[in-house]
Length: 393
Image (cartoon, rainbow, N blue to C red; front, side, top):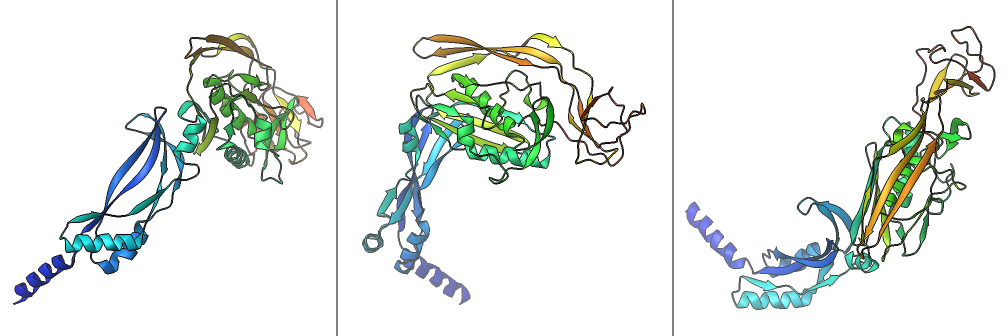
């Protein structure tokens, strides 16, 4: 008897189950510089007309702005959006009942698609179609404040567009860098010494962005290397110092379309990517060191914020050098240009911040603002704080 009841319930359920609703979910993609629309068939299981409105409401979705992502299958960067869709309930109900009466297994749902204002066609029409270049630098070992500033600064440049013929200004795009606008104090290069300043870490941002623009073959309008070689920016010769708003980084968009800057931070790695219309191939040499100068002796600088016998190392010794990087740009029309990026770095000694009255192992007491002394001649107490250099960022 139990098996008979279950079998009867099964056949009644099948009789109550209605036809499936069919529709297409659409997305636009830009792949290899070409735009395409992809439709993915969707099947909506409808148990009865009473479920129809609830199911259609759940199946509806909003349009989504286009985003770049790396497609593992294509081994390339792809721009994709999500088209929104909604359903006309009255018409859907009519079609459902007709299919049910005609004993059809499925029917076409009446669906309307909407495109986000910044869907893939928006970027495609601007000429933002391919990855032109990218660059990544590491800020491992940085202080919390410096890491914070790097993340904040990079986020301010994410999504910036540069029109054809426009010259990009790092200072203008970044805006005010102050505690009022959310930046923290971290070590920067000011004149001949490394000191605390608001916005320490900005040069990590400018250097990474500069490399992506340089690798994309864009004309560099304004760029200055750091005063000395900084470990964060290896290989040397490809850095760009900024001290906002006076010292800027500028480059020009000489491509036929708009450029899009995107930034991302993952762990201790900062990446910038430049998207646009690819009209050139770019090659560049490894940095070539033309000359070298030995680093000077260690310096001890009195810091009013440190008590006596406290040491904080803020700079590591770096030799002076003149470095060249050679770039060749081959345009699709056959034009070829070559340029040389020259960077000159001063020799730089290790620098320690110390509390006034600190006694060296030689017996000498540091009281002046700057006091030269041989390496490792200061007392290093267990409570000492050791920081990494931040340069003028």
